[in-house]
Image 1 (cartoon, rainbow, N blue to C red):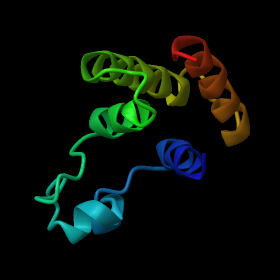
Image 2: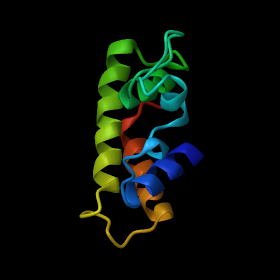
Image 3: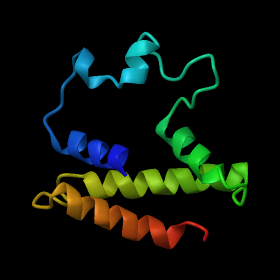
Length: 104
């Protein structure tokens, strides 16, 4: 949840195009997404990996769900949608919407 909170707070802050804007993993990999050790390369792949952890969600379904979860996050963090909302409210909205989508 802390990673999601940080993502929401970054999305709501002014954009930084310098080296600080890159994730620690991207900086460690020389600015390239992912690594040769099989690390997920995109947000979709990271979400899909989490969805597959319990073995109840197959690879194809996890990839599709990951795209939907990413879209929910993108829309919830869009300044035009939640301009007055705080990070906690946005996190609650994302959690509620994603909870309806994911298999139990």
